[in-house]
Amino acid sequence: SSRRTLSNQSQLQNHFQQVFAKDGARFSFLMPFDESWIPAPATALFNKQNDKYLYDTLFALIKGEPYEMQCPKTGERLERGRGWLIFKDSKWQKAKLPNKRTFVRVGLNRQTEAAEEGVLYAIEAIDVASYSNQNGALTFTGFVEFPDAQCQQAFDAILDALRW
Image (cartoon, rainbow, N blue to C red; front, side, top):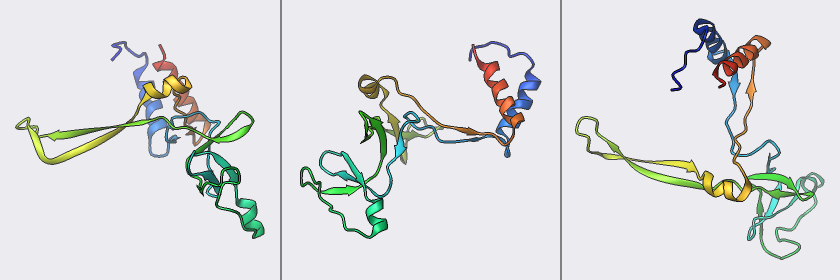
């Protein structure tokens, strides 16, 4: 869309084929947070009422010791951990994911340009505006695995060609 001509297009096509072919680079999912977040272990316990991370029960399970399913501070019920943790203020806390918005749409018939019966779908999107006001800019993080150094060099060449 920038309407600029990329020099050496055949070389770029070769790089593109090398990176995105079947045996090329492997791309992870892009997650809406930075790399300091970790997935909460399945053995973690959270306070169900205020969603606070409390502790990990792994050592108790290994030792065969019982552990309480009530918060030692408030007496409220605990639940197994799900979600993500972040190290903040010298302790692990449950990370707040960005809010999502759901948009419901109707499918259109291309011939009649009217709503098609039985075609209803929903799109789920991250609400960037609400997240940015609370936590700063939203960052998507992922990783790329390259099968060899040549594939990585081809990827870098593509990025260099696309930079302004």
